[in-house]
Image 1 (cartoon, rainbow over the protein chains, first blue to last red):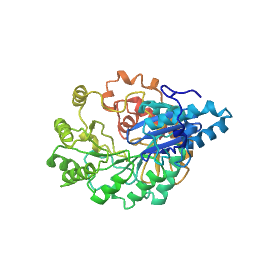
Image 2: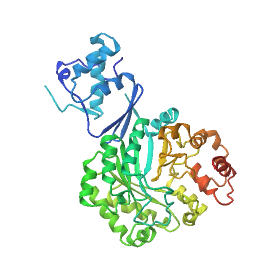
Image 3: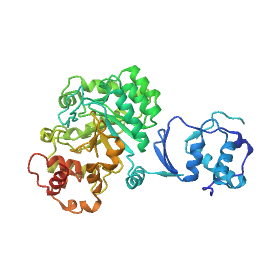
Image 4: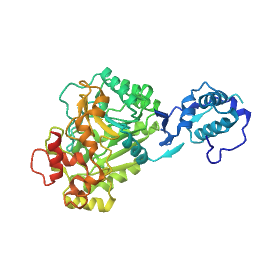
Length: 107
Length: 326
């Protein structure tokens, strides 16, 4: 579970409280362990590896980033610290690509 | 997470046999009578609203993401808005709509604008009322289409237009590109004219002669989607007719089954016709690349087989493919 380019930023506790939600103009197909996501705003299509797909399917507009980290940690049976920066990096990438937003900010 | 180009995504889906892009012709009815129309074949009654919704559920389960709703003219269906809403909100599809837009109204445009649609594509057959109306067979259709375009543009619905280049409008292609620029919408052209679904060759009378096809492609580049060996037919795309007949692609002359007789999953994975269509590999086209008739079919399997129907056609490959299926 490695971080992608530029996503090894220090983890702020603020983001852990945020609730990511899939944006309205985004459509998804999950096939096995892989998700395919299309933004109708940018007309870009993305394929996701197993970890990113897992994170993606856990984003429901209710769970906080912390909740998602915990669930991924449980799923893969890895230490939470190892998992945290990966999950946050993935969610930041989703946000950068306009696939998710944080409508219910707690910060 | 990796951003994938359209061809890359389809290449993955081809390998996995996932019908990622599906064209659903909702009706054979149309309020226009375009000269080149291949007239959607409909041997049985059109699918009901509930049948269409069940079909959309099946498509979603099979992994379809890009759904094109077309016809005929899809807006002539009374239940079109319900189907569209179901496709977008329940099915979660990226929906494209092919429509002549002559039936567009302000409330309908508002409805389109309220949904996360992929895009709407319309057709212009000429740059002015005189030519367009003559080729669509309906007086007033040019103005009506332009009005529909304007209604959607005002509401920021993603919109594009295309034309089919034929003998009667080839000299106006530049003017059509100019009109589209003025309307501020993307425009493309295609030079493929297909035989009718019942095998009638009537539309071919309007097809460009070889010399004009070559001239057109020299001037504008190879615009056809049908590059030899790169076709997704039956591997990641399929087409479903208004009566539930399933085809490996829209112009393919032989149905692979009907959703009223079998599940879509069974047709997609087990139909002999689908199997034959997807057996074709790029090696099968090697001979096509040097064929003197390539200019006519442009490497499109479906077009070649269509041309081979009903009379002698010089392409023996197309004829033998057709014989395998019938």
